[in-house]
Image (cartoon, rainbow, N blue to C red; front, top):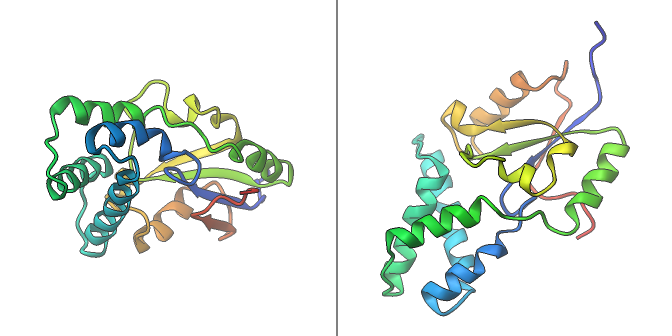
Length: 181
């Protein structure tokens, strides 16, 4: 049986392939300032990395909810359960950046196998990447919850290639889109 030896590019999902700016209306409504979205996302990334470096694991979505509650507390804003539900709903519907489909098309045509690495397993049906029209480009999806680590933990560089259908360490880890942006 021939082994596929094409190189693999691994992409992060949120804010690399999928555009979180579609969450701006929620932050505009809650904080009267859509730019708070960036503050929230920075806290989300900071706390996910802090937990990872501490050897602890909390699902990415739970960290996101906690970061929203923390940012709201800092700004003196009350967060209701309906706001949390809206955050989760909007996160499940994020579109791809405009340059992602052309970039993934070029990479696939150049002979790369494209896979994703994400911190969260979606309960959405269809999954967000499918809703964003990206599934046709991707060979596999690695969900980090399965190895109880968040991106970028050293364990992932050991875990993912073992599960990658490549016979040698040819995986290229990309945490930023290799597109035209």
